[in-house]
Length: 147
Image (cartoon, rainbow, N blue to C red; front, side):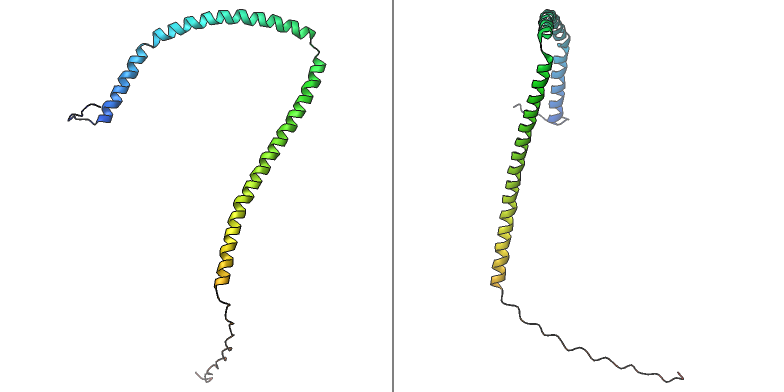
């Protein structure tokens, strides 16, 4: 690490400037890299076109001799069996999640029940509460009729 001298700006600002300069230098090389990749792509494209044409001829010949009805029936049975397999796996995963949730919730319920039971056993039996006698109704003072 270099020693930091007393400068006007903080070191992170200089680091950002250095990263920007490095990126600029790399971008200056970009036209040469694009030209090189373009030449490679053109050569690959020619080779790919030749291979694609040969494969197309093979597939055309194979398509003429293929029994599409049998292929369609086979695809339907394979799709059905894959759907059943997916359903079984989904059910198994769901069952595992349910069991896990039951364990998590069950542990919490058992722990809570143990605490509550211990509290109940530790406390004394509640004392009977007697009802207080009902208060007597007050008599209202009557006012003379002339007031």
